[in-house]
Length: 208
Image 1 (cartoon, rainbow, N blue to C red):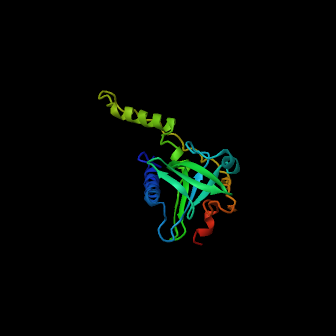
Image 2 (image 1 turned 45 degrees about the vertical axis):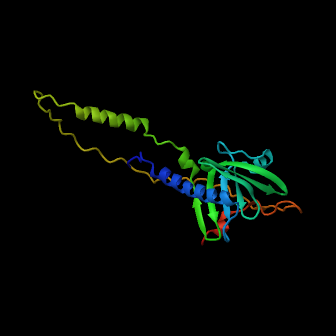
């Protein structure tokens, strides 16, 4: 199988992240979501550049999902990240999330969602050393012209080798299932911002 040196998968994900950036940028200008639109944003809390409080990091050591709907403030969007203020159990928090750390974006009002493969983006396009060396050797050999004076020598015929015995193929090992984020709805206190943040499972919105 040929190696994708162009990395169409990464180019596609970058283009889709630009969609998320554009949507958040438009909302940051007014601070209000139009119509029934609201966003569920899942991000990797371990990703470089993520800045959240120690309390949130201990509670969500791998990933968390925030909701931008009724109560949020100070939404700032740049080319590389977004910042937003939210309330978690009556405690205000400021989150700094790089766009590359986003794993999912979903708008339930129109059933629009995007999923991003952070593992694929972390991988650098590379050719295995053995294959690269073999390719270079083949090119070098093809570039050398054969000497004109040398006559081709025929190899003596040899009896065909008996086919090697093939045993039953071992079953493929299944990858461990990814951890599922457990729902944890916030309960805001009176006189404090409410509905600003909620941890949910995006599975409930997916069409079956």
